[in-house]
Image (cartoon, rainbow, N blue to C red):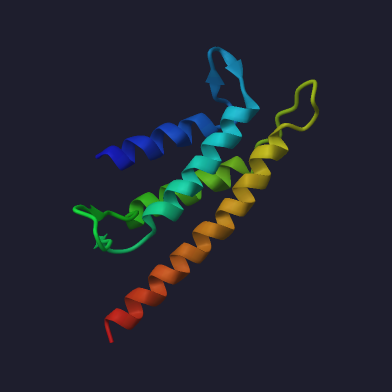
Amino acid sequence: EVLNSVLTCLSEASRKEALIGGVSDAETRRNSIVSLVNICKTVGIGTARASKGDSFPIYPLTTTQTKFVFGTLLAAMDDYNTDRRGDVGSWSRIVAMNGLETLAYLAIGATYARSHRDE
C-alpha cells in the first residue's frame, strides 16, 4: 500500500542514524517528522470516509500505522545529535513533541467518534 511505503520512508529518514547522501542531515530528519505529522492530520485516524465532491474516499491510518507513527515520534525524542550549529537534534525533538500532541488528539478524536457511532 502506498501509505505504508510513505510512512516507512519518512520514518527511516527521521532516524537519528539516518544518512542522506552519506551525511547526517538534521533538516531532513526534522522535515520527515513534520511530513509524517502532516500526513496524519490529512488522512486522520479511524474509518474510511468520502468528502463531499470527492470521487474517492480518504483511507485514514489503521491502528498498526498509528502505532508505527507513535513509535517513530517517540524514537525521534532520543535525537541528541550535534554539529557546528550546536544541538541540531533538538529540532527533531521539538517537532516530535508537537507531533505526539497532534497524534494524541487525533487518536482521542477517533476513539470519541467511534464510541458515539456505536451508540
